Length: 329
Image (cartoon, rainbow, N blue to C red; front, side, top):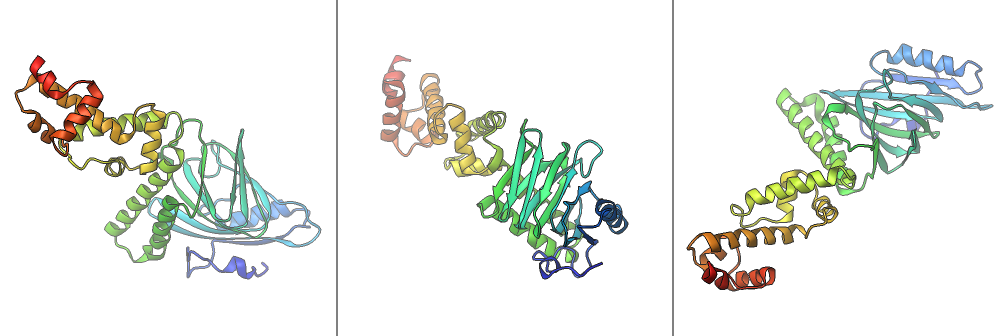
């Protein structure tokens, strides 16, 4: 085996260190049996721990293909720090490589390219890509590419229909938070007890779901579901929560405020707080008709700043004053 370049030796995430890589192969591109040699050596080294996907090396007159992979198991997740020169292959699909997993490629240098059916994803340095791997994906890797791959059970993450991959900038707030948590967990995992490891796993999963919600909520099937969940939550908290606001609603539903706003916009209704105001006015109107509470009592009960604010909002909404409704009832 030839010695790897410095770029392949240094693991920026310290995944699997101080142990040697699980896979460390070098095959001359000019070798006529290069693909057979590569798969044979990979399978010998990686075994069941890092199974070899179908791979195809390009034909070059000179130079050597190199690949090196460190692996770290973290409960039912695992991470791989991967270095690869130019190669193509296939992953996923029924009975294929990691077919029952969600696979996230976090590119540090170079580029991965994925394709399945009509969907394409280019994952250059500074971006990440989350894939449903029950479908077969063809991939290509540029020479000198370095990436971290996160693999977790498919049952843990919900993709919207007709979406097989989601990409994001690593610097985006939700992605940056997830990656910081994941990197810290990887560095500390060997020293964590069972309870702390479970907590780290669950925190990572929640951040992963937050990233996914930020990225895929535009899907036509997701936005209506979030809109319904938000309106149900608002209905429950109309009376109980005087500080009801978009940030609190989004936090309760584990989505970003921006995602919540988009769901309301796609739902064709008023803004989030416009909806809250409308429902409070409707509930106040029902109490004006059915109870003997005073206008000021009803205003306070439904969390209006004062009676004048309530009267003004009520008249704008119903084209009459609360007193007129009370007198007519």
